[in-house]
Length: 403
Image 1 (cartoon, rainbow, N blue to C red):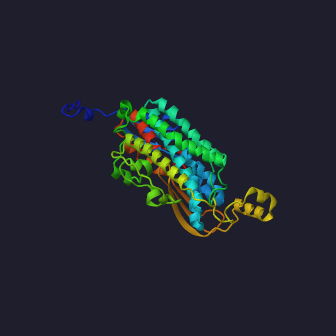
Image 2 (cartoon, rainbow, N blue to C red):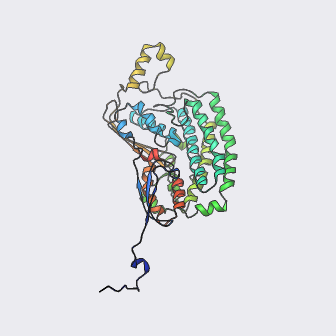
Image 3 (cartoon, rainbow, N blue to C red):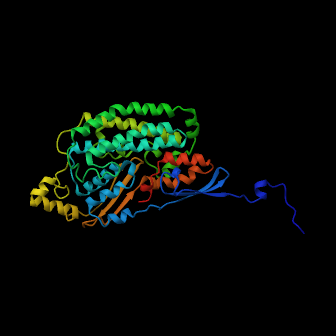
């Protein structure tokens, strides 16, 4: 006999729920990189999400075990390539910590200028993309040109723009020319006006606010449990900044504020990065005003490449050049962790040296890899369009995600 249906139960319990599966990525313009999210959808509502990583895994850590210390710098370029000089200098500081090198104050201040320019470039990309993904193309096209001005500065310093290989273990390879200083001065003079115009387009725009407020929120408790750092943590109300908590490169000499949010949503992440750009401009201005005189590199001939004109005309310089490039210099044994405030958060380098020509072990602490673990939890119950904006505001960089 056919069993009678109990109509007192809710409809959802009477019928098994059917969901649709949507692959957001790995090749999709909304993901801003090659990684995949397998979404279980109930119409436009996200019921569950599973991230898939590793599409551009390049075995950086294993490569580093086979390369001399000076040759690891180009690997770091390919982590967060939106602010690669910070990666470069973070690695150099790690090696300098191991060999106990004393860096001249002038070189440290020059590093600060480059790192803060890199932070501005990184935040320009993130904030303009948030605007783009909410339908505001005008602000994206307008402000993005200033990223190119920053790349012009990098090009005048080292000859490269995106993957810079800038700076050296011990400091800079040469003093900056006047053209570089002129470009920096023009940038810090003209960029604030452009940034204010960009903010006028979006910051109090009702459509933008409706799309971003309460979109992809994360509490301070959850952010700490997931080990968030950088702007994503500060947007949740935690004022942790590596530049203040563990100062490096003379950051203790500079006066700047740590902007924080309250709700940890997309709007807070946008406004925190916006204020950080203003603070970076202030830091650059202070560095230029108080720039010390002196050398731009440490006196460490075993690690710092001699000038090219000496290499071409002096046998001893040629020998040192060969030994440094091929990794034939003595490196002390030790275990070091050094971190810097990257564009996305705490970028750390855990280095173990056994005294050989290459690291015994090198681990990159990539902030993107850490906070992306929280992404499925942040978008559950949200609309698909909100999930895309949330991803943009987290500034997930695939190169940093898949080291």
